[in-house]
Length: 201
Ligand code: GRF
Image 1 (cartoon, rainbow, N blue to C red):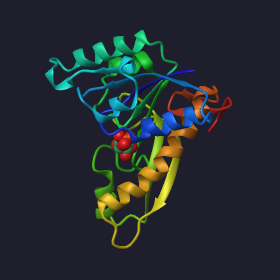
Image 2: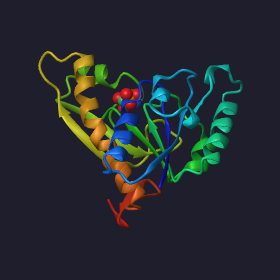
Image 3: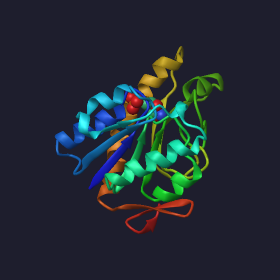
């Protein structure tokens, strides 16, 4: 199964997928890493031939970037497209084109805390727990059907960075697990929900 990864930053979630493939616990190939930032560190984690990046800020109108990204993705014929720390909102046409095989990992227990700075917001609210979600991507930000979540406690004296680190530690196995189900054909997006082995989740 062919997986394309979209990443804007460090790429530790991408690395978790690469490590699982190397360890043969994930039966898939990463066929490309795509970024909206020219020199995203995530790109360095794969061979040069697999890297695609453009400076999204240089595109106007915005949609032109997404159209070019979509063409570049299609060129590698992905079965699944995984957003792993991809920080740019995908436009509606892009989502329509890859819908059903487009996954995202988001650092919150969705539907809580869509968008950015989730850790600081959970702390400011005095939440008792926080975590990460992997969901199918729909056109609204961080709003698609959730496949799976991982929880962590919020501890006394937590800072956003400490909490982010605790969440990241559960993101990696969570993402690998969901991608494993995806490539095995066990999960599917059906309207606003997810089916697992053909049954509603
Ligand atoms: C992760 O917390 C991811 O959920 C969020 O941004 C962070 C990216 O980390 N969207 P990395 O680039 O995978 O290391």
